[in-house]
Image (cartoon, rainbow, N blue to C red):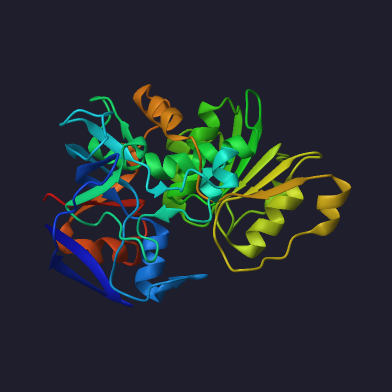
Length: 337
């Protein structure tokens, strides 16, 4: 099979590799669509994210969908030909975090495209059958792949306890921000303000259900007279984060989704005097059924986020597309094309 392999900063080569054999309770999946993520771009540009360092050739890509083509020993959940969305992280199932249902925090998680685990910019992958989620035929291959970033939005909304009538502020209208927006509306939020500095992305946010948008270059959040119950911070920008925290209502919830620097300043007075709850998010847990249901019911729009398609021999183009097109939202790689 073919695989696009990162061999160093800014260097991806197309290689022939043996097709994997599914192990115990694994299925072999022919990959049909893989979304590109900011973390893929970061590994490509810098060779590391925090403590995760690329030390040997690595296949990136952790937003895959595909078709089950073979079952390994003991795997009986899926028929051959079943279309699936793949949850890219498989935990050890036995640690304290797994037993508590927080398998996203498993210290021995094996996550696609995170050193040293190969990802899905390839024609076939093997994955534990429990993490291959069936999708209905009404959901496209691209949308099935984007269940991964949608799960980030679902998890963020759960952490923020978004429900009917919640007022939500989303800072950052990139792919994750746009999916947090849609998830918040699906969870019952009646007012969602989205901020960004990119007019095209703000226009997309309005199309996808934002009740208000704010161009942070021209307007001040402090002057917007919007007091959210929940902040979903998706920009990772220190100044934007601090300003957004200051806007949150008393007893509100602050969920830090975007990845910026290792440290950011937070307005301690606002946190203390308003008794704000602040939490980070790390991936997701038990979100795929909800994400698939929302997409199948038309409660979120995923295909509209896809603004470019690339073949497996164009992975470098997919990862650098954002530098050429300021209106790009989501590039998708189709390994079979």
